[in-house]
Length: 315
Image (tube, rainbow, N blue to C red; front, side, top):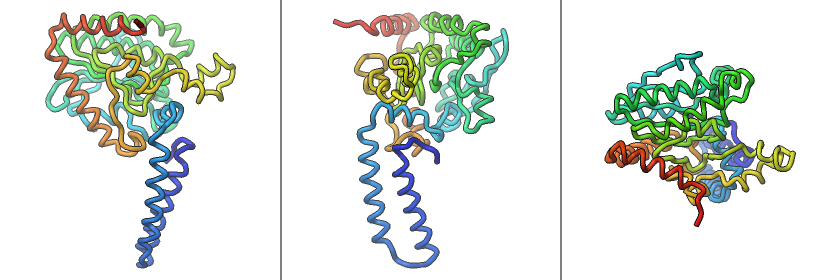
């Protein structure tokens, strides 16, 4: 399992324990005391590593190759998913998937950034970096959801919107800006959840919501730590320091009133127990939608407006 450097001692010890158990099973000998010692050591190592993660270590977990992606969560916690395609202007963006689904018989529109597991799929998904046609597709379908009275659930997981020349020529900044404006007035409940990376306008382009949640080991930031380090210190290797000053973790964002809640992850990260992570997300979605469904469309929009207008206000 590929992972960040700080996880390597844990992975190596887990491998050693598994090899010892296989050896015991094969040779039919009793080395249970040795296994117990190693398991106790592993437990202490996990606690020392995961209890006090630094912001940079959380960023690394947010990017973990085995971390569940949007389609993983849709398949885990939703049913009857039907993907919808195209912006009716240029094409279909595979980096931003959208469709109709049910969660415990409740109909909704679900969308989210989708990364790939290997090089071929990452090229197809553009590493989760959406093009303008992706944001236009998302807006088209959110407006459709409003027309049919369906709530919207958004999974955010992108290092940022695609910055290529073609995307700029097709109006990347305009597409994101339009989404920011229009999502403020879509009269249906919107819940967005940062499940991995929440980078810059690429994340915010589908992030204007009544409830914004961040998973425990995800990040939500105006820029990536590497980009920030390159600007401030002309040195991308200072990303760990940048992660500290950006205040991009769920704990910092909750204190500042940028997000509404932190969704807990299994000990060690969502990749350690995807099903448990999915269940936590499902519970958060159902709870928030139940609360939002009780509001009139007028009240919903009023509170959404106040929520974003109050950000950054002090005193």
